[in-house]
Image 1 (cartoon, rainbow, N blue to C red):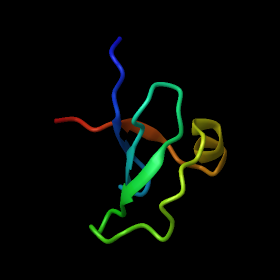
Image 2: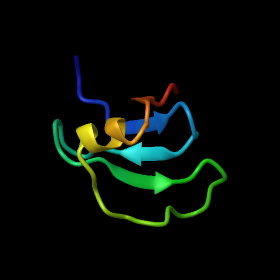
Image 3: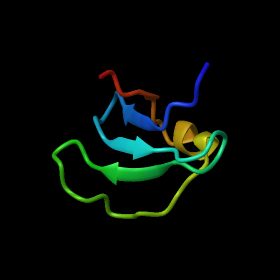
Length: 59
């Protein structure tokens, strides 16, 4: 399976980017289109532990 870098949180609708496989995940924008409160990258484990449910963006 190819690396998918565009992700969305199915719970909140927030969008994320994961530039490298197994690397940090960065917030891109919130569900309403505004800038996220933090641009800091997080691990996949941290985001899922925080209640995020990340899925690839369906095109």
